[in-house]
Image 1 (cartoon, rainbow, N blue to C red):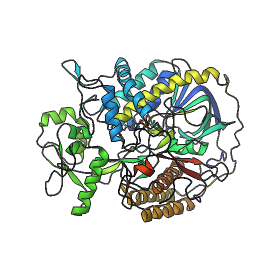
Image 2 (image 1 turned 135 degrees about the horizontal axis):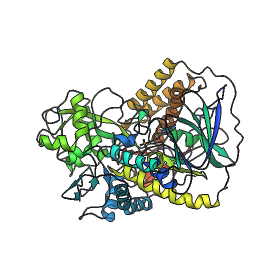
Image 3 (image 1 turned 90 degrees about the horizontal axis):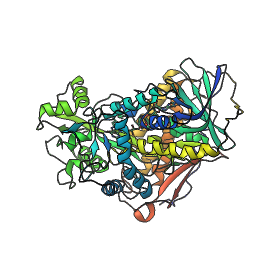
Image 4 (image 1 turned 135 degrees about the vertical axis):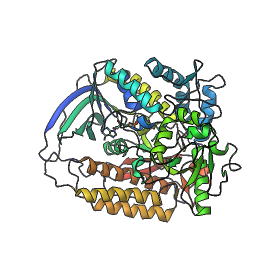
Length: 560
Ligand SMILES: Cc1cc2nc3c(=O)[nH]c(=O)nc-3n(C[C@H](O)[C@H](O)[C@H](O)COP(=O)(O)OP(=O)(O)OC[C@H]3O[C@@H](n4cnc5c(N)ncnc54)[C@H](O)[C@@H]3O)c2cc1C
């Protein structure tokens, strides 16, 4: 096996200058704190930071075009009478298959209940019965502990409450439909970002501290539950700035996305199985019964593995979710989003079997942070799905990610107090050094083809199951896509493709190094979990000399 350590060099240099001013207007603005991203993590950070500082918040879409807005199942927190942070800790560590950071998980589960109460104080109405919070069951939770709102509309309800809290003050300047291209660095510190507006103008936003909360990267794969904005921009720009990335091989696939060709595809929430829905194969068998003590409520990685086995055994590419035995009025009331979503696609949740298949869903890999949201770059914080705090290990426990955005978004604000007390009080003008050449960029058809190729390559050869020869094929394929592209012009589609390629390369390189199967990372050529060699993280950072990625593994900070 490959010795843990430096991987093969030779990936293309992702630092070829990403942006050329090329005649575009440049505006300047400055803030104490710049937040990039308007999902649960970014909004939490912005609302907290605005109590003390002037804050700029940039999102590439509108506030309702986030992953947060789509969240269905709810937020996990130890709020029930039979629950405790200790039990939540135990479940999270078990689901994480030996790779969670214990300290980070402890912070998550101990501070989580207070953050959910904060949301309630801001006006979020979680679903209650007889005045008590209704707690849902989801996979690998040993007790019901998932609060939800509007049935399965938790994300939009929570996002709405946070957006209201943000707009009730005057200290957050919100810029929607603005695409952040890159972070700005000065003397080793992050001092802002450069972004592209809809009219093609550039804005240089200088800031004393930057919070990166750009969400995930599900769009790297052809079938995903993630919205179009989830192209790994935060990951890629942090990497270009020199931050350390970690656990990039771990992409969680959700077992039950609606089977079809749409992008994104409709999620059929795990909470449905929590309420008693079954999974069946073509022959009607409940294949999870007898496969795991928790049957359909086994951890997500386990359910996905079994679905994959059914595909191989039966030569199929989907299985069936069966909720027909559940009460129809209950299904309509508890799962309005799923119910109407399926109705639009010609399916009746009450009376029909629903075809489902795994789709990329949650990116565990991210910008390495400590438990205060601090990255390896001074002045740069990361929280939410962009960050890698170590709470998910090799497999995320269901409904822990909204909680992560809340807990670590708030802790980021607390650390900003410390950082801004000692950081330069004034934002210095920095030397921009932007290239000035006029770039023709790439034909939109070539860019669209490139994006499709990345999705197909990653899905076919680096998806749920991986092995060496397949990973090599993706490497070659991704390099060909990269080589087919001229330096990007100032268009979102081109810049997104560069970011997708960067993240895809990181996933492939890390997946090639991890020669074992653990959590969401399955290697058919190394089918066993190998604690002796691989109970450790894999990290990637940019070589400042060659510009290429350095892949390393370390035994550090690996929990029990
Ligand atoms: C369908 C679905 C259902 C889910 N249900 C649940 C659930 O019930 N419970 C749970 O815990 N988790 C759930 N998850 C996961 C969870 O929703 C996400 O992990 C979480 O919402 C991520 O929040 P975030 O703030 O990190 O990112 P997001 O909510 O994705 O927000 C990212 C923000 O960054 C902005 N951005 C990105 N790139 C740029 C750029 N270049 N320039 C400017 N802005 C940029 C985007 O515009 C957006 O505003 C679900 C995920 C999906 C896809």
